[in-house]
Length: 69
Image 1 (cartoon, rainbow, N blue to C red):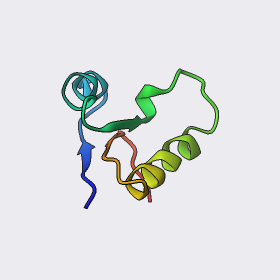
Image 2: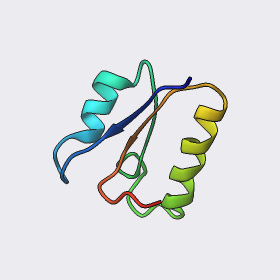
Image 3: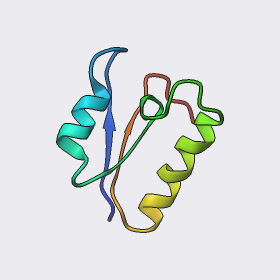
Image 4: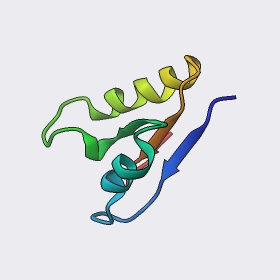
């Protein structure tokens, strides 16, 4: 079974910093805040690793303020 973590918090609450500081060693990090400003296709770029990492048996940590199915 593959581990997953969902990092939840309000805007400017430090989700990316927490993820990098506490989860980066064990989990592949995925989140809209980790992309450069103005990056195109954020939703697709975010969804792809969320599906691929667990399928490959690797844990994933997801952080987003606007999650959607």
